Length: 385
Image 1 (spheres, one colour):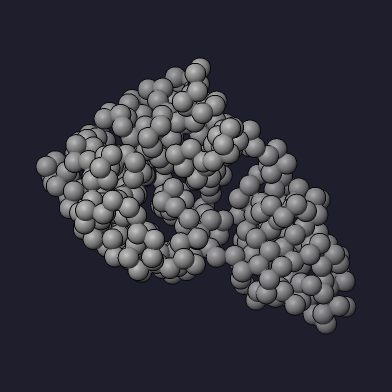
Image 2: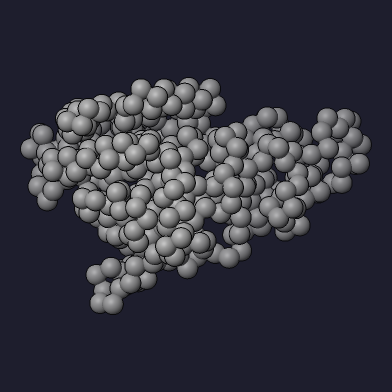
């Protein structure tokens, strides 16, 4: 990445979401690494002193609980896993509070489940609470509420990388920093001789996503696939993302000094309005509407509304006003929006020109199936993948 681009990223980053992974926070024995947490506290204080605002998304609750309970293996039964997470949460927040208090700062624990971000009213309440915490000068420490989550809810977040991306879009933060045990994305497995770090990704496509897979074993390496997926969410919403090594005790300070560390993912355009960020990534889609290539181009490239003529088929049952996913012919989502017709109505008018809707239904309440003001583009160029 050119020095000027690094400087622009650092200068623009007034509100930063930092996600820290379990492998960064714990040692080989599974216990929390107090020195690492102290380092984070010092770095956060340095950034806050320079006028930045920091929100932390932290993994490590289960690992911390295992360490406190002296467990050698991760529990498999859900209730036991949740219990260990509950024990670990207290260890985790205590460690952060000690590290922050030494610099005159305070940790504020925030536990979320998927429904919190899918429901519009709760989403707004969380955003307002986080903003109030930042106004007080506190550092929000966010994690998924594993104590009450069940499998169906976990699939909505999937992992704390995705949670961090959703928090970034919720707040409209300029930058998401994903701290890992590797220093970014490499052109091959980092352990292979000659592996080279990729300093800048301007567009996440199939080639970039393939770098998250081990070419020999086909298995994820250090959760890189989920980090690239999180970077896609943030960059499509108009923010930037950096994947860097959390084992560097000065990594955040170096990023803010525009040093060439980690892999930076450039924003794909201007930041989306808050309403569209919720529509695109946090709202729960109730169905899928598959459209033809012409309709997709009209929505993505021309910024137009979706008309019934471009609808080819749909899946699921939904009501007027529900959020639905829009997909190309291959089934890959490229947008989400509020639908003006219930599924039963849309099945009847799919493929029809607008002037024929009234004849089919007996009424035509809307010319558009989804108005452009209620559409959020989630994937600009799936054809490149």
